[in-house]
Image (cartoon, rainbow, N blue to C red; front, top):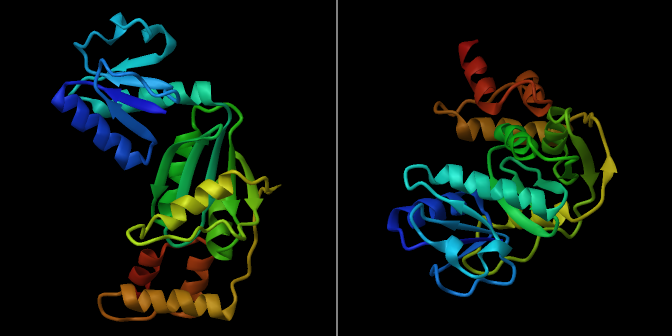
Length: 246
């Protein structure tokens, strides 16, 4: 786990905001406080004397520049990857997939991004990892196929995602996909290089309905364009634009 231990106001807010944006597990303490048992990396300010603590040698430390908190967070996450074990990325597919990055049993990153951005997010998170694995849920057929086919440069496993979506209480809206991705990352799957899916009439109709909702002129794309969206040849916005040009 990352611990932020600083009295520097700019460092604190910059680093904390970066960690929250990434969905990374962390906690904050005063520089002189006792550190949690799960501490993996400590982020401090540039002028703080954390290294003088008696227990400082037991932890990796990153001194954050208040002008570049992102660099400090990336350095801390790189250290966690080295110490935490194999990097496993879980993906709960859908129109806006949940993505969870794990080092061993620790969640070091979490994202909720549009489908078209998901492969790039995954590639970025495994870029420097040794022998990573990406586990994709099999529940959303068309979306999972697009993700699997886009990740041809990393080991991908297709996971039975039955029971991976948790019950969410009040106030947890939007967390279900990410939590499901964590559960998917923890399940062994079947190694897969591609997933060919023939879209059903119902799936094509869903895409058409979404196009009408998304279109500023309330237009519905035709079946050919819907099929190209389903197979990943076009994004929905590209299909809507092409339909408008006809």
